[in-house]
Length: 293
Image (cartoon, rainbow, N blue to C red; front, side, top):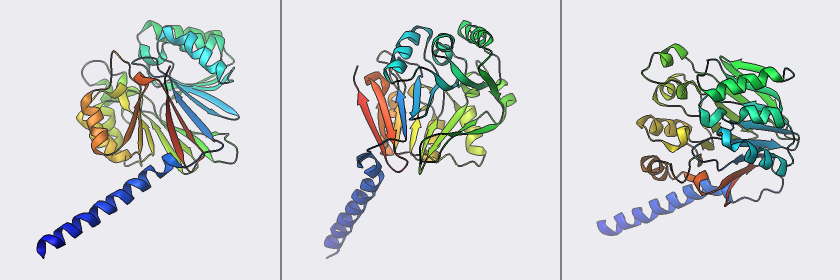
């Protein structure tokens, strides 16, 4: 009798888990007839280049490496984007700011947002020179938290950008500190939230988790191209996403420990090493697809 009871309880628990998983994945199966927001993560190797687009607004978060400029420009043109409303550079490593100078000179941007520190690489110097050559572009270094409204039809949409809470602590750490100076951005589109984490590492993640801010999001761009660190586990617990996108390359893929951390939390992941990753939302549902090049 006891054995039958245990079996019955097991069946009930399995059914509840199945229902829970169905709820988690519902937003991935609903039909989206007219997206309010499209996020396109480009396959530019171990580098970040993401296009955000609504009917009336277009932006980029990071610009890959210098060699990626022509490809990004052509991709923007193919999407009907001949000018950017916003360019957000999360930090000044060459695989994030790399083609910013070329894009400013060809596509252009109304506004550029970037962190408040000085880079050391040639790509950063070229970026600053391009900004000087285009004084019509509004430039802002983010030192706290800024929120911008995004025109997306009838769906309320905003972009919140967060600088490091304690830059001095980050600068005092050993080695390079660029990654932890990354701007973190959250897009809220209707009921759905999307978190962009640049290349943040343990010090910055710890600051975020200690801040008391709500980092929950339905979708996350994983930090640092899928590189694993123990703090990633804590970040995933705080964000609790359904979907994850990793900007990695075939020759430098995401680390297995990161993929395992996503798998054990039943977070569906896509890697740009496998091709372009396109995410669409109408503010109530999310759909992610892979486009092989």
